[in-house]
Image 1 (cartoon, protein in one colour):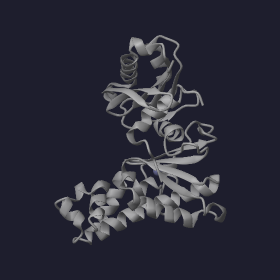
Image 2 (cartoon, protein in one colour; image 1 turned 180 degrees about the horizontal axis):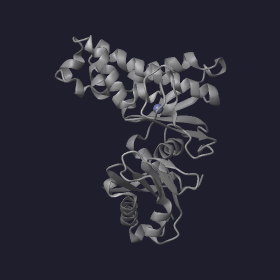
Image 3 (cartoon, protein in one colour; image 1 turned 180 degrees about the vertical axis):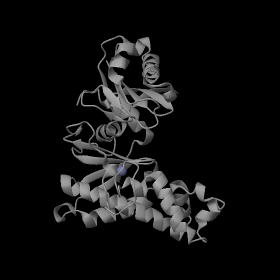
Length: 319
Ligand SMILES: [Zn+2]
Protein backbone atom coordinates (compact mmCIF):
# COMPACT_ATOMS: atom_id res chain seq x y z
CA UNK A 1 0.00 0.00 0.00
CA UNK A 2 1.37 3.41 -0.89
CA UNK A 3 2.06 5.87 1.85
CA UNK A 4 2.20 9.66 1.87
CA UNK A 5 3.64 12.53 3.82
CA UNK A 6 2.08 15.92 4.38
CA UNK A 7 4.24 18.92 3.60
CA UNK A 8 3.35 22.37 4.93
CA UNK A 9 4.84 25.52 3.42
CA UNK A 10 4.29 28.41 5.82
CA UNK A 11 4.44 31.78 4.09
CA UNK A 12 3.68 35.32 5.21
CA UNK A 13 0.26 35.33 3.52
CA UNK A 14 -0.70 31.70 2.88
CA UNK A 15 -0.25 28.29 4.46
CA UNK A 16 0.11 25.71 1.71
CA UNK A 17 -0.42 22.03 2.46
CA UNK A 18 0.40 19.18 0.10
CA UNK A 19 -0.17 15.45 0.14
CA UNK A 20 3.11 14.06 -1.19
CA UNK A 21 3.96 10.58 -2.42
CA UNK A 22 7.24 8.92 -1.44
CA UNK A 23 8.66 9.62 -4.90
CA UNK A 24 8.04 13.34 -4.53
CA UNK A 25 4.76 13.97 -6.36
CA UNK A 26 2.27 16.46 -4.93
CA UNK A 27 -1.02 14.58 -5.30
CA UNK A 28 -3.27 17.14 -3.69
CA UNK A 29 -2.72 20.70 -2.55
CA UNK A 30 -4.71 23.22 -0.56
CA UNK A 31 -4.00 26.63 0.91
CA UNK A 32 -5.43 28.92 3.54
CA UNK A 33 -4.62 32.35 4.91
CA UNK A 34 -1.73 32.52 7.40
CA UNK A 35 -3.22 35.38 9.43
CA UNK A 36 0.32 36.34 10.38
CA UNK A 37 -0.84 39.63 11.91
CA UNK A 38 -2.80 37.76 14.60
CA UNK A 39 0.26 36.26 16.27
CA UNK A 40 1.94 32.84 16.33
CA UNK A 41 -0.78 30.91 18.21
CA UNK A 42 -3.33 31.75 15.49
CA UNK A 43 -0.80 30.86 12.79
CA UNK A 44 -0.22 27.46 14.43
CA UNK A 45 -4.01 27.01 14.46
CA UNK A 46 -4.17 27.72 10.71
CA UNK A 47 -1.49 25.10 10.10
CA UNK A 48 -3.46 22.55 12.14
CA UNK A 49 -6.58 23.34 10.10
CA UNK A 50 -4.64 22.85 6.86
CA UNK A 51 -3.26 19.50 8.05
CA UNK A 52 -6.71 18.28 9.12
CA UNK A 53 -8.25 19.41 5.85
CA UNK A 54 -5.78 17.50 3.71
CA UNK A 55 -5.81 14.33 5.84
CA UNK A 56 -9.17 13.11 4.63
CA UNK A 57 -10.31 9.87 6.30
CA UNK A 58 -9.20 7.79 3.33
CA UNK A 59 -5.69 9.31 3.38
CA UNK A 60 -5.42 9.35 7.14
CA UNK A 61 -4.11 5.84 7.82
CA UNK A 62 -1.49 6.04 5.12
CA UNK A 63 0.14 9.28 6.25
CA UNK A 64 3.59 8.63 7.70
CA UNK A 65 4.12 12.10 9.10
CA UNK A 66 3.91 15.86 8.73
CA UNK A 67 6.74 18.26 7.93
CA UNK A 68 6.51 22.03 8.23
CA UNK A 69 8.76 24.52 6.41
CA UNK A 70 8.79 27.84 8.23
CA UNK A 71 10.61 31.15 7.85
CA UNK A 72 12.88 32.16 10.75
CA UNK A 73 15.42 30.15 12.68
CA UNK A 74 14.34 26.79 14.06
CA UNK A 75 16.13 26.15 17.33
CA UNK A 76 18.18 23.01 17.93
CA UNK A 77 15.26 21.73 20.03
CA UNK A 78 13.34 21.27 16.75
CA UNK A 79 10.42 23.09 18.31
CA UNK A 80 11.00 26.79 18.88
CA UNK A 81 10.95 29.19 15.93
CA UNK A 82 12.57 32.58 16.31
CA UNK A 83 11.62 35.85 14.67
CA UNK A 84 10.38 34.86 11.23
CA UNK A 85 10.51 38.05 9.12
CA UNK A 86 7.04 39.57 8.40
CA UNK A 87 5.33 37.76 11.30
CA UNK A 88 3.98 40.26 13.77
CA UNK A 89 4.49 39.72 17.51
CA UNK A 90 6.50 36.60 16.93
CA UNK A 91 9.70 36.62 18.99
CA UNK A 92 10.16 33.00 20.01
CA UNK A 93 7.36 30.44 19.77
CA UNK A 94 7.10 26.66 20.34
CA UNK A 95 5.60 25.92 16.93
CA UNK A 96 6.09 22.15 16.96
CA UNK A 97 4.45 21.61 20.35
CA UNK A 98 1.65 23.97 19.48
CA UNK A 99 0.82 22.12 16.24
CA UNK A 100 1.13 18.71 17.96
CA UNK A 101 -1.32 19.84 20.63
CA UNK A 102 -3.78 21.07 18.01
CA UNK A 103 -3.57 17.77 16.11
CA UNK A 104 -4.04 15.74 19.29
CA UNK A 105 -2.37 12.62 17.89
CA UNK A 106 1.11 11.12 17.82
CA UNK A 107 1.83 11.49 14.13
CA UNK A 108 5.54 12.18 13.51
CA UNK A 109 5.93 15.94 13.15
CA UNK A 110 9.03 17.89 12.18
CA UNK A 111 9.64 21.54 11.50
CA UNK A 112 12.46 23.06 9.53
CA UNK A 113 13.61 26.44 8.23
CA UNK A 114 12.12 27.02 4.76
CA UNK A 115 15.42 27.49 2.90
CA UNK A 116 16.76 24.29 4.48
CA UNK A 117 13.58 22.47 3.50
CA UNK A 118 13.92 23.70 -0.09
CA UNK A 119 17.54 22.48 -0.10
CA UNK A 120 16.38 19.05 1.07
CA UNK A 121 13.69 19.02 -1.62
CA UNK A 122 16.32 19.63 -4.33
CA UNK A 123 18.48 16.89 -2.77
CA UNK A 124 15.68 14.30 -2.74
CA UNK A 125 13.64 15.17 -5.81
CA UNK A 126 15.32 17.99 -7.77
CA UNK A 127 18.59 19.23 -9.25
CA UNK A 128 20.60 17.71 -6.40
CA UNK A 129 19.29 14.19 -6.82
CA UNK A 130 22.14 11.72 -6.44
CA UNK A 131 24.45 14.45 -5.10
CA UNK A 132 25.54 14.14 -1.49
CA UNK A 133 27.01 17.57 -0.86
CA UNK A 134 25.99 20.96 -2.19
CA UNK A 135 25.10 24.51 -1.36
CA UNK A 136 21.55 25.60 -2.07
CA UNK A 137 20.90 29.30 -2.65
CA UNK A 138 17.51 30.94 -2.86
CA UNK A 139 17.78 34.23 -4.72
CA UNK A 140 14.75 36.48 -4.43
CA UNK A 141 13.63 39.14 -1.96
CA UNK A 142 16.56 38.05 0.20
CA UNK A 143 19.41 35.69 -0.46
CA UNK A 144 18.95 32.56 1.62
CA UNK A 145 20.75 29.28 1.73
CA UNK A 146 20.85 25.70 2.89
CA UNK A 147 23.78 23.34 3.18
CA UNK A 148 23.45 19.65 2.33
CA UNK A 149 26.17 17.41 3.72
CA UNK A 150 26.05 13.63 3.17
CA UNK A 151 22.51 14.02 1.90
CA UNK A 152 21.20 15.74 5.03
CA UNK A 153 20.61 19.34 6.10
CA UNK A 154 23.53 20.81 8.05
CA UNK A 155 22.20 22.89 10.95
CA UNK A 156 25.34 24.02 12.76
CA UNK A 157 25.80 24.06 16.54
CA UNK A 158 23.13 26.74 17.06
CA UNK A 159 20.66 25.70 14.40
CA UNK A 160 21.16 28.69 12.12
CA UNK A 161 23.62 27.40 9.50
CA UNK A 162 23.19 28.35 5.86
CA UNK A 163 22.92 32.15 6.13
CA UNK A 164 24.68 32.37 2.81
CA UNK A 165 23.23 35.79 1.98
CA UNK A 166 25.05 37.38 4.87
CA UNK A 167 28.54 36.40 3.91
CA UNK A 168 30.39 39.60 2.95
CA UNK A 169 32.12 40.07 -0.39
CA UNK A 170 33.54 43.51 0.51
CA UNK A 171 34.41 44.95 3.93
CA UNK A 172 33.80 48.43 2.53
CA UNK A 173 30.62 47.45 0.74
CA UNK A 174 27.03 48.59 1.28
CA UNK A 175 25.30 48.30 4.64
CA UNK A 176 23.06 45.26 4.94
CA UNK A 177 19.79 45.05 6.91
CA UNK A 178 21.46 42.42 9.13
CA UNK A 179 23.98 44.98 10.42
CA UNK A 180 26.95 43.59 8.49
CA UNK A 181 28.79 45.36 5.66
CA UNK A 182 29.03 44.12 2.08
CA UNK A 183 26.81 41.03 2.41
CA UNK A 184 26.04 39.40 -0.92
CA UNK A 185 22.36 40.08 -0.14
CA UNK A 186 23.09 43.81 0.04
CA UNK A 187 24.14 43.69 -3.64
CA UNK A 188 21.73 41.26 -5.23
CA UNK A 189 18.69 40.84 -2.94
CA UNK A 190 15.66 42.11 -4.89
CA UNK A 191 15.42 45.61 -3.43
CA UNK A 192 19.18 46.16 -3.30
CA UNK A 193 19.63 44.97 -6.88
CA UNK A 194 16.77 47.20 -8.01
CA UNK A 195 18.36 50.20 -6.28
CA UNK A 196 21.73 49.43 -7.88
CA UNK A 197 20.02 49.25 -11.24
CA UNK A 198 18.33 52.63 -10.77
CA UNK A 199 21.69 54.27 -9.96
CA UNK A 200 23.32 52.64 -12.96
CA UNK A 201 20.51 53.59 -15.32
CA UNK A 202 20.34 57.22 -14.22
CA UNK A 203 23.19 58.03 -16.60
CA UNK A 204 21.85 55.69 -19.28
CA UNK A 205 18.54 57.29 -20.19
CA UNK A 206 18.52 55.58 -23.62
CA UNK A 207 18.16 52.15 -21.99
CA UNK A 208 15.01 50.23 -22.92
CA UNK A 209 14.35 49.76 -19.21
CA UNK A 210 13.13 53.35 -18.96
CA UNK A 211 10.55 52.72 -21.66
CA UNK A 212 9.36 49.52 -20.00
CA UNK A 213 8.75 51.32 -16.70
CA UNK A 214 7.44 54.51 -18.33
CA UNK A 215 10.27 56.45 -16.70
CA UNK A 216 9.15 55.45 -13.21
CA UNK A 217 12.31 54.43 -11.34
CA UNK A 218 10.21 52.82 -8.59
CA UNK A 219 9.11 50.19 -11.12
CA UNK A 220 12.63 49.05 -11.93
CA UNK A 221 13.06 45.50 -10.66
CA UNK A 222 14.89 42.36 -11.75
CA UNK A 223 11.95 41.14 -13.85
CA UNK A 224 12.00 44.31 -15.94
CA UNK A 225 15.79 44.15 -16.25
CA UNK A 226 15.44 40.59 -17.54
CA UNK A 227 12.81 41.67 -20.05
CA UNK A 228 14.98 44.53 -21.31
CA UNK A 229 18.04 42.29 -21.52
CA UNK A 230 16.05 39.80 -23.61
CA UNK A 231 15.26 42.72 -25.96
CA UNK A 232 19.00 43.24 -26.34
CA UNK A 233 19.35 46.18 -23.96
CA UNK A 234 23.01 46.66 -23.10
CA UNK A 235 22.66 48.35 -19.71
CA UNK A 236 20.14 45.81 -18.37
CA UNK A 237 22.35 42.97 -19.58
CA UNK A 238 25.34 44.52 -17.81
CA UNK A 239 23.44 44.84 -14.51
CA UNK A 240 22.20 41.25 -14.55
CA UNK A 241 25.59 39.94 -15.69
CA UNK A 242 27.24 41.72 -12.78
CA UNK A 243 24.66 40.30 -10.35
CA UNK A 244 25.42 36.80 -11.63
CA UNK A 245 29.15 37.42 -11.27
CA UNK A 246 28.80 38.71 -7.72
CA UNK A 247 26.82 35.64 -6.73
CA UNK A 248 29.47 33.52 -8.41
CA UNK A 249 32.14 35.17 -6.27
CA UNK A 250 30.23 34.43 -3.07
CA UNK A 251 29.50 30.85 -4.12
CA UNK A 252 33.13 30.15 -5.00
CA UNK A 253 34.30 31.33 -1.55
CA UNK A 254 31.93 28.84 0.00
CA UNK A 255 33.06 26.08 -2.37
CA UNK A 256 36.69 26.72 -1.48
CA UNK A 257 35.98 26.47 2.25
CA UNK A 258 33.83 23.36 1.98
CA UNK A 259 35.57 21.68 -0.97
CA UNK A 260 32.14 21.54 -2.65
CA UNK A 261 31.83 21.26 -6.43
CA UNK A 262 28.12 22.03 -6.69
CA UNK A 263 25.75 24.87 -5.91
CA UNK A 264 22.07 24.90 -6.84
CA UNK A 265 20.37 28.27 -7.20
CA UNK A 266 16.61 28.83 -7.09
CA UNK A 267 14.27 31.70 -6.24
CA UNK A 268 12.51 34.34 -8.33
CA UNK A 269 15.55 36.15 -9.73
CA UNK A 270 17.22 32.90 -10.77
CA UNK A 271 14.41 32.59 -13.33
CA UNK A 272 16.55 34.91 -15.48
CA UNK A 273 18.32 31.68 -16.53
CA UNK A 274 21.45 31.86 -18.70
CA UNK A 275 21.55 35.62 -18.34
CA UNK A 276 22.71 35.14 -14.74
CA UNK A 277 23.87 31.50 -14.68
CA UNK A 278 26.47 31.99 -17.44
CA UNK A 279 28.37 34.80 -15.69
CA UNK A 280 27.91 32.99 -12.36
CA UNK A 281 29.52 29.82 -13.68
CA UNK A 282 32.29 31.74 -15.43
CA UNK A 283 33.14 33.49 -12.17
CA UNK A 284 33.00 30.25 -10.18
CA UNK A 285 35.43 28.55 -12.59
CA UNK A 286 37.78 31.48 -12.16
CA UNK A 287 37.60 31.75 -8.37
CA UNK A 288 37.62 28.19 -7.07
CA UNK A 289 40.83 26.39 -6.19
CA UNK A 290 42.56 24.56 -9.06
CA UNK A 291 41.41 21.02 -8.16
CA UNK A 292 37.77 22.14 -8.21
CA UNK A 293 37.99 24.12 -11.47
CA UNK A 294 37.18 21.30 -13.90
CA UNK A 295 34.19 20.09 -11.86
CA UNK A 296 32.71 23.11 -10.05
CA UNK A 297 29.29 24.11 -11.34
CA UNK A 298 26.17 26.06 -10.46
CA UNK A 299 22.88 24.54 -11.59
CA UNK A 300 19.38 26.01 -11.62
CA UNK A 301 16.98 24.56 -9.03
CA UNK A 302 14.26 22.31 -10.49
CA UNK A 303 11.38 22.53 -8.09
CA UNK A 304 10.40 26.21 -8.11
CA UNK A 305 7.70 27.11 -5.61
CA UNK A 306 6.91 23.45 -4.92
CA UNK A 307 10.21 23.13 -3.04
CA UNK A 308 8.70 24.21 0.29
CA UNK A 309 5.98 21.54 0.33
CA UNK A 310 8.25 18.83 -1.07
CA UNK A 311 11.09 19.59 1.34
CA UNK A 312 8.72 19.70 4.30
CA UNK A 313 7.26 16.32 3.33
CA UNK A 314 10.80 15.01 2.77
CA UNK A 315 11.58 15.67 6.43
CA UNK A 316 9.44 12.76 7.54
CA UNK A 317 10.25 10.36 4.69
CA UNK A 318 12.70 7.49 5.01
CA UNK A 319 16.24 8.23 3.67
ZN1 LIG B 1 23.61 40.88 5.81
